[in-house]
Amino acid sequence: MPGPSRPLWQVAGKRDPQQEKEAQDWIEKVVGQRFHPGYSYEENLRDGVLLCMLMNRLAPGIIQKVNTSGGDYKMMDNLNQFQKACVHYGVPDVDLFQTTDLWDFKNIVLVTQTIFALGRTAYRHPEWRGPWLGPRPSEENRRDFSEEQLRAGEAIIGLQAGSNKGATQSGQNFGASRKIIFGK
Image (cartoon, rainbow, N blue to C red; front, side, top):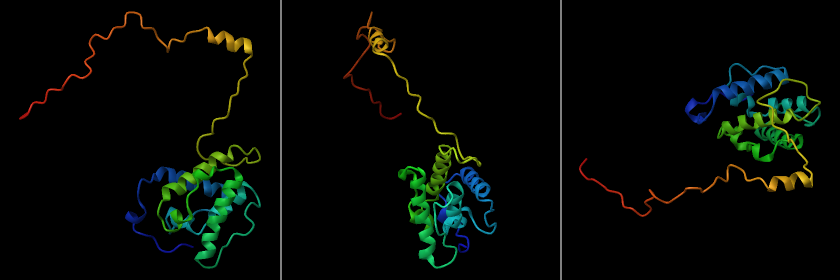
């Protein structure tokens, strides 16, 4: 379990407590285990055990061995395993936090964003029927047009193109100087 609480000013930033609460609630529902009440959000996630359990619930067996005891190296290994499992599950690697972001409490916002990215990716796995996190991602709506339809569209001038009927350059004053009034 993580160490004692850090002062809030060390871990605060542009964090959104509502988003963190949503992420925590989702993790608790998926894993079936509550966060330890004596520790903060980031301290509960720091050793990576809950994150590995989360991945194993979303994709059973994706992480072979979760380190529940041992030194800091073993706990950091949990975070690395979680990140690799996320990529394997389909989370874009640009959405992943760095191990030090969580381990050193550097950027908890990125940790929460990773959890939300994982929640969005879960929508794309039909085998997952559990609780969801965040809005459902959009899906491609591909359309195929025939050559005849494409040629018909070339003859139409869209209204965005507009018209220059009656347009003049009157009223434009490019290059005119501004008047600066001192003392007001």
